Length: 345
Ligand code: NAD
Image (spheres, rainbow, N blue to C red):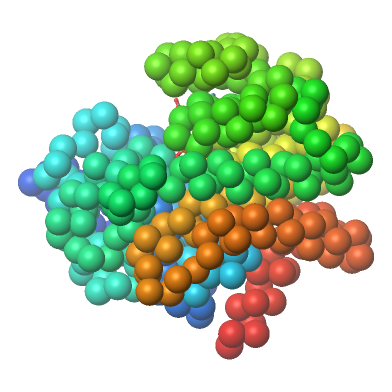
């Protein structure tokens, strides 16, 4: 397996591997860029088919965190961790071994929740290292950054809907949510409260049932992306927008929480050719990291609510730059993020 030639290597500052035979932990931590501060980003646990899949995922995710943290105006760099395995089989000992792995980096990387991990898992990590966030009990949602992520996506959807449909409210729209997990469920509630018709899918029956109870129409996961809808909101795994799926997508806008929704950056051109506007994931799903940073560094006293509302304004800036320079939104968002990092240098 080549790391340096991996398309997503992009001069990462650090990529480190760890295996703990006693607990079965196999994990990779990647730090992409620490110009703005120590790297912060979630820890994902997933049963990757190959080790290369895991490495590619962690590299793409940590690069995305660099851009996300920069656009959110946070004093932190981009990093991410992945654990290869089925989260249902994770033991407390495995999470503690992960905590020791994080600790070895002495604060270069600060971990948090992501897909397949939980507040309980982070608390076990926190028993081994202080370099973890999303474990703060005194918040309304007890450390879980997902409601903040959902709120940021919801605010951004209003901006993107205005841009695409020239409409100032969400009421009456049909939004398709892929994944009613930690973020998708909260987004579902916010949208239904705003008069949106939510259709959606989740192979996890419990999560699908919770969405159904809120008033969402639940469909087969394999069908969702080809149904008529105004907005498609991916809130499950990455790479769901690709050369196979985009030609069948009937939405006018893609705006969701999932990281790395585009299988490759070129997929945004396929979306644009079909007049489907894209809200770049890393520009709009930063509510969770804003929340996580405030838990980690309470002395920084950041205005969490203000920063989450500002995500919509950042998306407006992204669309303005894209229009000005006749480029797509994804490229415009990366330009804005890199500008801030260059200024810091
Ligand atoms: P989660 O694991 O809680 O939820 C994901 C849900 O997607 C699960 O219910 C799962 O069953 C479902 N799912 C899996 N495959 C599916 C499919 N083919 N069709 C429909 N549903 C499917 O994860 P989460 O924390 O809600 O995060 C969702 C996405 O948002 C991830 O890509 C994550 O990286 C990203 N994200 C999360 C946060 C956060 O605060 N949790 C922040 C930023 C980005």
